[in-house]
Amino acid sequence: MSLWTEEEIKLVLLLSKEMSTPQVAKEIGRTAGSVKYKLAAMGIRLREMRGTRTSPQPAAWTKEQIAFLKKNHKKYTLPQLAAQIGRSPHAVKVKCSRLNLYRRRRGWSYELMTELIRLRKEEKLDWCDLAQKLNRTARACKSKYYYLTTAV
Image (cartoon, rainbow, N blue to C red; front, side, top):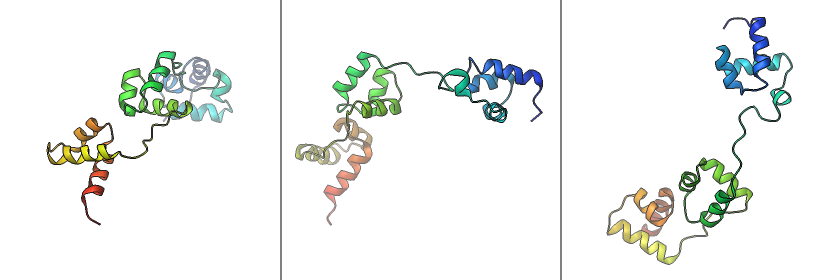
């Protein structure tokens, strides 16, 4: 890559106050890594220039989103919850953790295990369909099924 011009350096300093690093990089035709490296080499920290973040602040959680999580965190999977409230699965997982909403199930009931075996043997459902019907992951259904049906 070419050397930095004085004009590019001034532009980076100006734009970095208002834009994220990828946006600045796109604006001047450099990579984000190049912009970060240049600023660091000049002894400039982005956080000091623009608050505490180098990317846009995510939207705050609404009362409705939090209420939905509290009501449904054990009923739906992370991707389902995320789709319902317009957040990423990771954001939902972090928020549940911060609200002490633990999603971990405490085992399988006798009825649920019986239903798992019945659905797999009689209806010949695949693991994904089973998981959806039982509100579990496909991996959990497969593991539990083999655990229950194989002799040790």
